[in-house]
Image (tube, rainbow, N blue to C red; front, side, top):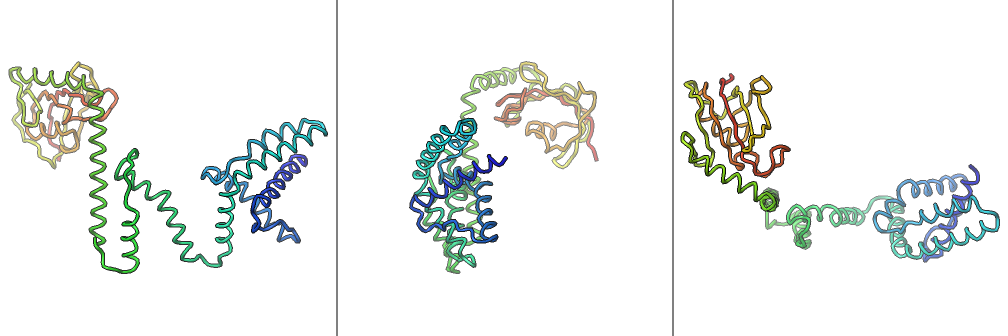
Length: 337
């Protein structure tokens, strides 16, 4: 255990010495004169070791030297005294090379770190810098993606963002009022989301063009059959058994038995097969069902031929693939109160 601690300490010492030699003249030098100095230094080492180094590596401030240390430690542990000296020298040289690469960005980081730590109170400048970094690295990239998509080169106008922000902070007259601004943002985001959804759907339509064509052909032929009614929406139905009861409205709960298949006969859902009717709101189902239920008297049994735009559209629901036309036998058992 002692050997490991000493080895680790020697590496930290090399790093510290090299850091000072890489242009960090303003960096405080190690001077452990009392217990407070020692615990303070230990706290700095611990903070760096328990996450800060990894964060800086992920942020692109540091190039990692840990793989060098790991590789050489295992080799040094099994080497004789002569080999150890050679390996330690090699390790120090490689770490020194990494530190020279790291020096420019690391010195800037240390400068900012020291300024921040030496402030007795957080200054307005520090607050602005902190929020500006969040804007630049998180909020604006997210907003750009929301408005223009992840692959777009278009970006919002930073100058106008600042103009609007500063106008509020300085209590100046606004070119766009606060409530109007929120509404405008929401409208633009919703428009962008709708455009992205439409784009994705068009891409899917190309992928599923053959099944769409087969579904369209099926509906066209089915419309010619005697007894099949085609509504303006494209929904088709035929009456298997007429009913004479009340007709549901949007606010009603209905009790039904149903059997659902694809146009090729594949069953995807069936309360009949389960042996238990289903109860749900008239508007809590696919649009094709809602339209049909508001035409069906209680006691009726209809067969519905539902085009994909009145069913699940471009959604993939396992057995029900995107742009699938569906067939349902629906028996309206009653209106629940």
